[in-house]
Amino acid sequence: MKKKLLALGLTLALALGLTACASNTDSQESTPPAETTPASETTPQNSETPTLEGTDINLGLLNGPTGMGAAKLLADNDAGETVNHYTVTMGSDPANDIVPKLNSGELDIAALPTNVAANLYNKTGNIQLLALNTLGVLHILENGDTVHSLVDLSGKTLYAINQGTNTEYVLDYLLTQNGLDPDTDVDIQWKTSEEVTSLMASGEIDLCMLPVPAATTVLMQNTDVRDAVDLSDAWTQSGASGTFTMGCVVVRTEFAQEHPEAVNAFLTEYEASINYIKDNPEEGGQLIEQYGIVPKAAIATAAIPQANMIFSAGEDLKTISSYYEVLFAADPTSIGGSIPDDAFYYIP
Image: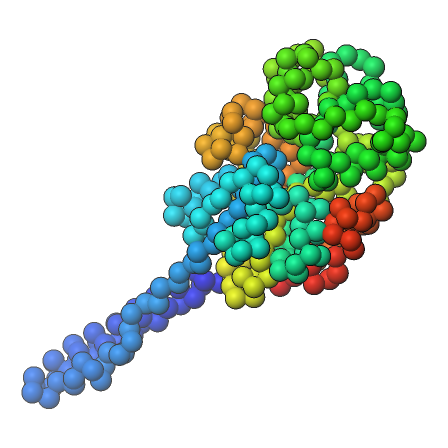
C-alpha cells in the first residue's frame, strides 16, 4: 500500500510539473514577458513528494530455534531493505533477558516460549500474541539402543534443560500419558543446555533431552548417539489435542495500538524471512551464525530442516488454545493460572 501511495504521489507531482512547464511555454510564446503568469499561480505550493518512513522497533530475539527464522530479517535490516528500522537485543534466557525489557517498554516485539507468553499476558495484560514461529523441536537422544518410546524411560536417568518452561511441562504430560510418574519413574536431572550438550557429546552420559539445534550439535559431534524419540511424534501418538507449539512472537499492546502499520509491516517482513531461511538452508545457516543465533553455520544448516519453523498469524493464532489447555491440565501455573482470553490474540 505504501509503494502504491508513493507511486501515486510521484505521478501526481510529475503531471503537475508537466502542466506547469506547458503553461510557462505557452505564455512565453503568446504573451509578452511583462504579462507572464506568476509561478506561484501555476506551481503547487506543496509540490514535494511525501516521504514514507518506517518505524523504529526494538526487537528481542532468543538464541536457538525461536530466533533462527529472523536471520534474513536482520540481514535485510542491516542492508536498509526493511520498511521498519530494527534495533535487536539477543538473549538466551527469556525470563531474564526478554520479559523484564518487555515489561519496562525497552522492547516492542519479542520472541518467547509460548507458555511464557501466556504467563506474561495473564500476569500483566500488556502483551499480545503476534505470531507462532516454532513447533516442537525436542528430541530424546541415546548413546545406546534401549529407548524407542517414552515407556522405555522407566527406571532411567534423563538429563534435560529448561526446567519451568514448555520443556518440563510437555515432558511431564507425555510421561503421564504413557503411564509413567515423572517424579518417581524417571530420574530427571535438570542442567543448562551447555552442560547437557557437552556431557552427551563427550559420551559421559547416555540419555538426554535437547531441542534442535543443540540436539543437532550432539549428533554431529558423537556418531554413537542416535535420535531415539522425537517428542513431536510422541505428542501425536499420545492423542494430545492441538499442535505442539513451542515458540512465538509477542508485541506490547500499547505499541501495537500506536503503530498498527508498523506491526503489520513486521509480520510481512518476518514471514518472508522465515520462508527464506527454510528454502535456503545453506545461506540461512550462514546468516544464523552471523547474527549469533547459533554458533556454527554448519550446525544451523543441518538444524533448519528439523527446526519446525512456521509462520502463523491472525485468526490462526487461536489454534494454540488447545495446546494451552494441555499445559493448564499439567500445571496451571505454567501459563499463569488460566487459558488466555481472546484479547490475547493480535488480530488486525
